Image 1 (tube, rainbow, N blue to C red):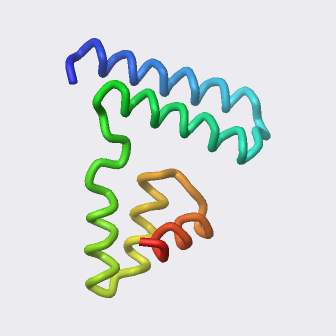
Image 2: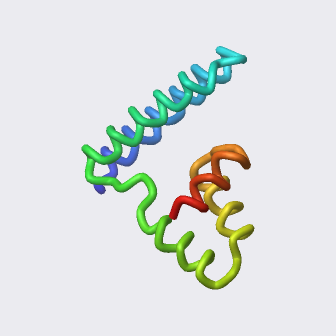
Length: 91
């Protein structure tokens, strides 16, 4: 990824954060829609949004560290506990 693309992505993320900060109580459905769109933009730019994350999570689960996997997914994906638990259990 070149510098211009990186700056474009950073600006886009900052704009989205600003919009949601002003919106206050935006719905979960709306937030997920924006996250999907951002992931699509990143993918089209050749940037994998969760590159290598599933492998890290699977390795943690295989080694008996399911809670650590859930924590990692929550941190990386910015989701709640319930969604992270469901995602990790679905791997």
